[in-house]
Image (cartoon, rainbow, N blue to C red; front, side, top):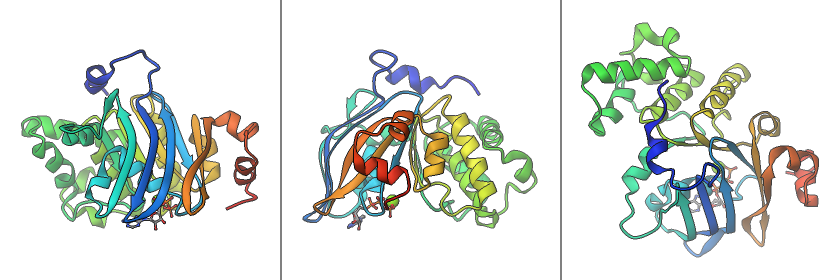
Length: 270
Ligand SMILES: Nc1ncnc2c1ncn2[C@@H]1O[C@H](COP(=O)(O)OP(=O)(O)OP(=O)(O)O)[C@@H](O)[C@H]1O
Ligand SMILES: [Mg+2]
């Protein structure tokens, strides 16, 4: 695949400057605080894996990075997030451009109720990308990249919902990477998949890391161990999720600073 042109445009400081820089992020639904004062950085072309118990705000954190939280009634965010150097909550910030640079994959595959082909062509048409021939080339290219081309090349006009769960999730990843995002947010992407499909997605995530910065939420500690370059561990305090510690995954797994992290990562908690 050709080098991603979006990297060049938005890399404004040194090579190791954080791609996502979260400062004092607090999230509330109505009056209820669900995530408290999170500060965390995601470094370029690495996989940051987020682990923690159900309800501690992992999905809310992901949704705040591409401002999907704007779309949730009563969701209120304070603090700051910089993506590729730019503060995303600043007035006038171009949210459409942000979402184009960030691919997002949900826990359950979410293909549009259209054909496989339309699932991929529509987003490109929506962004005014290419003529029909160029779009066709790009679709073929991304389907190869997610390992689906050979499996589905003869039924591109079948309904996407006819694919298996694992194939649907790979189609959603293909759709997410179509516009060459620089960042990929994955919210438990394997939780509804059989072990073989999950393994394929893991291999794909590793391959995508070569050209994208990835934030992965997972409940599977074994998966975190296999994939994480960096790891962030969340836990509750006074009813809200808080970041207990984060850093290089190897260090957290072998020498965590906090007793809670040790207990959670060794499977004694949660
Ligand atoms: N749209 C919403 N409106 C009100 N409360 C919400 C909404 N979405 C999430 N919450 C609440 O916010 C808290 C954090 O939810 P979130 O989905 O971010 O947690 P999570 O860590 O992703 O959990 P899980 O591991 O189960 O996916 C939970 O208490 C949840 O009930
Ligand atoms: Mg979640």
